[in-house]
Image (cartoon, rainbow, N blue to C red; front, side, top):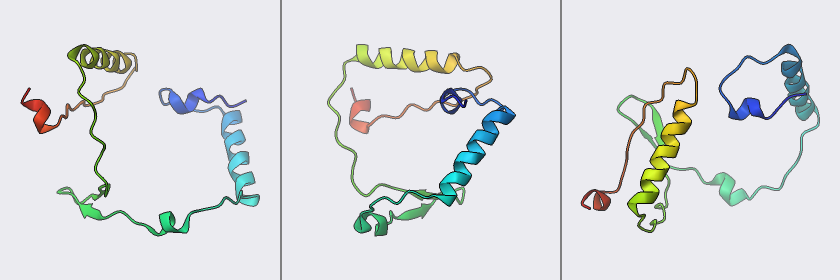
Amino acid sequence: MLSGAYFRGSPVKWSTADGETILRAVLGARENPTVRAVDEKKLAKRPPVFVSRDDVPVTVPETAEPELPPTDTTSIYSGLLRMADLIAMQPNLNVPLYWCLQMKSAKR
């Protein structure tokens, strides 16, 4: 039986049985599709597409992100330590990390 851990863990090669289970599920979904209601207005709406310096298309949300309340430094350090611990636990994973903050936060 296929375990959900494959989708949340490190990349691993699936067994033949797992691959066959997924193939049967995909082919079954193609033969017997599930029809769901769709909001036509949301379906018709397309975000603006820009091209980056590397000629890669990029979409930008139209609405601004909600303003988050200020966070004390203890919570920030705790989150950074948890993130570093999660990355350190992943074998053979090389992830570049970038720190981003709002300009008004940088003045503090």
